[in-house]
Image (cartoon, rainbow, N blue to C red; front, side, top):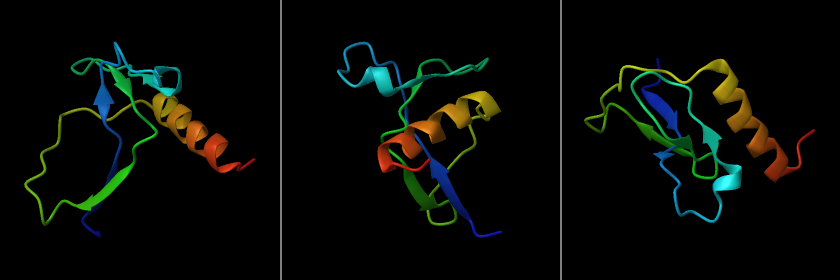
Amino acid sequence: MTGLVMVMPITHASNNRLRDFFIPLHAQKLEGYINPLQVFTFSIKGRQAEFSGEICSDQDWAAALQVHQQILGID
């Protein structure tokens, strides 16, 4: 295992002008929108990262990746 993680922030997006790009999060404990415009990778070994207890659904993850593909012009 590499100890690296890729994350996208979760926001409520109430007043964000880019919220049309955000993905509604379908989770039980977390609420809001995935912001696929901000992707971060970092080492969980070097930080005191904690697991929130939930992983986004395959549907939400696929939608976030689709936004990236559209931005990058990948078919």
